[in-house]
Length: 159
Image 1 (cartoon, rainbow, N blue to C red):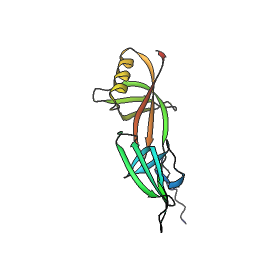
Image 2: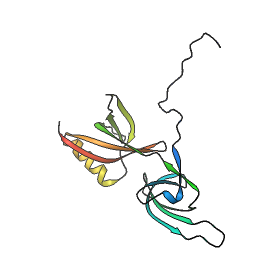
Image 3: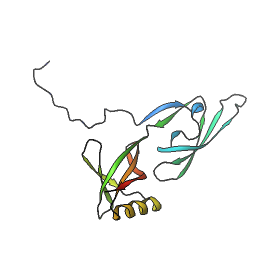
Image 4: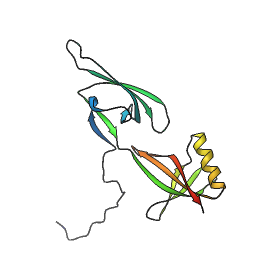
């Protein structure tokens, strides 16, 4: 080995997978599943009986957690499905820029400036309205599979 010190750039992601495997038969309604490469919340699960030679099949209906599109998938119940790691984080809203990006305050006191305003009209209107009134707003950011989006809003009182 060498005596040199090696510096490694930390990207905060330890190479962890964006999904983990779970047996299809154990995934329930209101859980999460990856359908056609998109993270989805399961809204309906039905299981068919085994055929003469086969596996029981699970029919999943899911709604994409970022764009609200409905997706379906049929998987043998003994096979593994990908389940996304979904996390929610609260940030305090500092500013809304002209080009539709928000400036958020993290727990550590740093700013996070790479998130767009949500596409959901009612959430978008209530964020802009509350910000214009000078309220202290906390937004909930949902992240899964390398994507992030504002999904909820809390008012913690006037500034």
